Image (cartoon, rainbow, N blue to C red; front, side, top):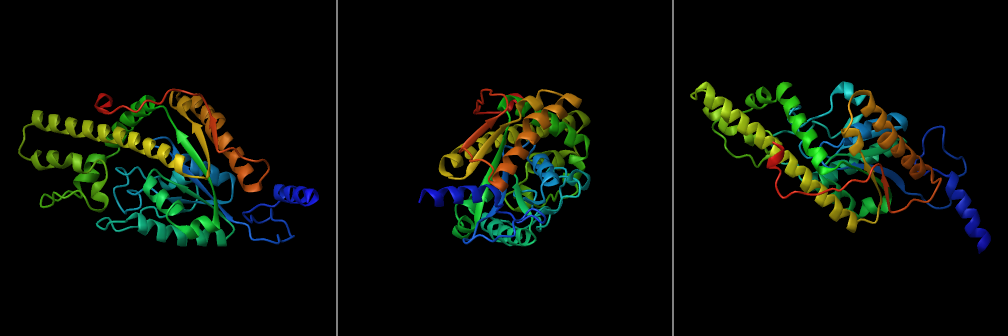
Length: 325
């Protein structure tokens, strides 16, 4: 019995569960191994898309979007979709494909994502599911028994100290405004519609501008400026509150999941700029994540339940985010 356990352990260390071309072992296992899937999760603004793309340039992988606003067509600035240049040739799925006036539910995501995953693994590629909509992730991992039977998962949780993240989110909204956010929302504004509970109209940045658009034609310049400043401030506040809710849900789901989860602390990256930030990203986020995935894909070492990489900082969750307008 001891000999059998040792031989299986040695076999496990060299047999990848994702059959990458050129890396597969000719000898077929006598039992079916699960396909592997990577999830990149974290609050909004932490760099999930960037990390997913980084990993997909180091491993034969494709990215599956699980952001519930980015699945819709349109409002690319508001929903902060990655650009073609930022994708760096990495195939993306469920990104900007859904009619903006429909409601793409968690069940819809589960059904569509299952088909996409099947396509990706059939082509001997690694699926990397990235996005901040944890309800989508939960629908797939916790509510789909077929998924749990077929796939083994590794979670990369990109985390940033909430005060630091709020400052970054505020600056990002300002950059989005400069990039054309106001005109993008104005182009879809309909004065005869005041329901922001359907489809892409739920996206942060759309309902907040409603009153500004309704009054800008008749208000004087001073009033228009005040209305616009208030709308932008509300966008920042709601985005910060979203980040808090996402972090709370990740913590709750982690207590329920039995998957391998690795928390990557990217706070130091956001405290630096320019070349120093790039170096910190590689050292504290991208490099360690690549090592984790290499271990996960090729079973080179056993994995702990949670790995914390990076500088440890307190992560308070404020009740309100108005201070970060």
